[in-house]
Length: 445
Image (cartoon, rainbow, N blue to C red; front, side, top):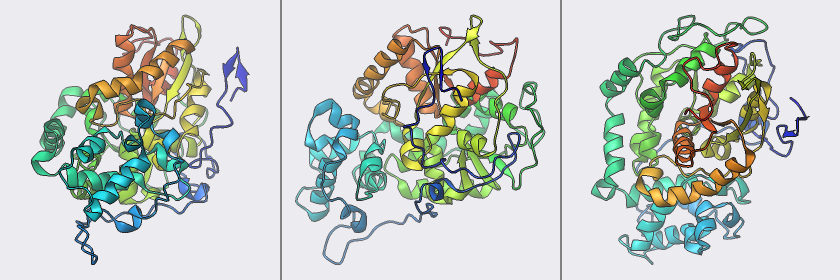
């Protein structure tokens, strides 16, 4: 990658990527399917084993068993998490920090606070669930798991927000998901099939045959709102299969108070998708990796990076190389430790500019933008200010929720910058002479 091009920032060396720093052998083409050192193995961490989720029961000490006691006791209340927390940054209040929320969880578990205490309901809802606190925690607190257990208790039954209930009902209907595919024409078919548009320019060398099947997961949101993303993946990686009859991965359930169903949905989807499960959504990747095992799940950028994919062409705007930045996916970066691969891919086809605070949540956070729109915008606004100062053409995202959040924010600001998914961005680079092939340019999104 360029160290510095026309004053642009190269992929910053200070961006550690524990999930990719020691990638395995890099074969030619997109589809070598080679699996090198696993992301977590590369970082020196133990690979995440498939998780078992079961309803908790009262403890022998009389506690209600809302939380896994081992997880809850791990917090040493050091406060390292406070500067990393977006909601603490908004309020400066201890109760809106990870440490403060774990104190609330302990009070709930020990009976010091009644279950209907309004602070419990407010803070379990106010938290974005971005897991940025996990990356700075010296005690290894699995805050994301604790939050799921908290919401399992706070958001059970009719206490769950109606928007979340409606969305969970919709994604639980496979027939509705299949209907989205018929209407929106997302990618479909087996390896070597067409993805609804001509293949991109071939890579420098033909793709090698995968050493195991690779199945593209069609996300619920992407199927309906961004079907071009999966088609772009098939354009980049024709060896990838798109099995039919896919359901939802269950991340929506897990993050909205039904982690048991969310785990069951992840396992069911894993049985329908043979081999490596390839996703284009950081949130889905983290959820699936937690329940299927890290070795079975790859997000698009790490899959391409491990396969030694060489992006074709470049993205241009008005005859010049485009300026582009990245908004991280919280769960991809904080949950799976993947941050460098998408930056390297963008820098290969455009002038990469690092977005200050790219590792900070954009405020989408699954259903958060719908449940708490004012707080969501308050989190997003400083990021939009930074994007404006960067004067970029594209803001690349690796998660559909982030894509929608940044897209809507840029439109409200009437920014000329356009939000785009990484898959579409790379496909756009491989279409010489057809820069707008179904994709609007900057300012048109």
